Each structure stands twice: as structure tokens, then as C-alpha cells.
Image (cartoon, rainbow, N blue to C red; front, side, top):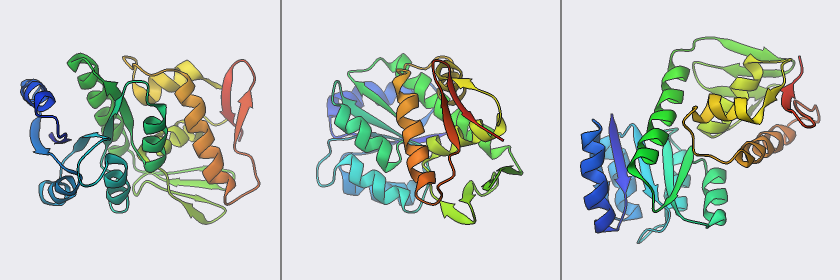
Length: 223
């Protein structure tokens, strides 16, 4: 697995790159946003680990440009406590984020969780349907009432989880374990954030409510 590390702090790179290599990952490094886009095209990485604050072009803009042509998993590095970076990153299509300074064990756990989600989806080959919502598991496409909706990879996996469990109430902890892995370091409130993203995008094309709140328990897609 090849990871594109987009980081302009040489001290972090000197710590990070040997640790990732020790974990069995091949790495390439970009120190600016523009170089990140160049290496994304030339190196075809399996995952991108990217700082938000970068010279020439910030990480959010780099992510937006990458999302115009690829669903490659992206984990953003954010400043601790900077919630606006997290929100902007998730809105732009980030699969996960990690706050600086971070432990290498936490980072590797997040990388492996994202890659597991990717591997699970690549083994699927079917069409899932709930009412007028249709998911193409081969092409990772989603249509509601015949209209295509574009989701980030994490949003897609979350929707797939609901569709596969249509009629069943899923708790926040069940969702966290299924999407981010049992070793996740994510606050359960992130589930509410992603549910909001799904509802907003589906609501842009239909008035039919798909994801409903079961107060005090979790969420459900009714059949």
C-alpha cells in the first residue's frame, strides 16, 4: 500500500515516514499543495495523509480538486481544537481526520480502518434498493428517484450500512464500530454530523424521508 504524505513540517516527516515504513507502507512526500496534486496523478497512491495548512494551496482545496476525479481515501491532519478544519474537511470529502499532535498508534489504526472499509466495498457486487433509493455497489453510485447523488466515501459506506440493515435501528456505537472500526478514536457526535450530510444530500432530490431518528436509541431506514 502506497501512502502520499502531504506535510510541510520536516520534523513531522522525519518522525512519520520511518514509522509508516516500519508498518509496511510505501511512502511518497509532498511539501506543498500543488506538489500533492502532481504526485497524486503520477504516483497513484492508495491513501493520502494530508495536513490542512500547506504552502501554495491548502489541504481543503487540494482535497476538493482530488474529489473531482477520485475517491482515494484521504485522512486530514488538523490542529487540535480546530473544529472548523474538521467540518470543512468532511464537507470536502475527507474520510477521516486526526488532530495534531498525534500518536503513531492512533494514526496507523485510522489508516487501517479506512483501508478495511475500502477493501470491504471492493468485494461487493450487487444492487441494493430501499424504496426509490438504489445503490450500485460495483460503481459506488447512488440514485434516488432516478437522480444521481454524489457522496464522499465515508458517507457512501454509512448509507450502505443503513440500506443493508433496512428496518433495523442502529445505535451510534454500532455505526461507529461498523464505519470507523472498533478501535476508533472518534467522538460519537460525528455520527450525527454524517447523518446530517446524508439527509441534506438526499433531501436535495426528494421530499421522501429516508433516515429517521429513533429518539434515545439511534437511526433507521424504514423499508
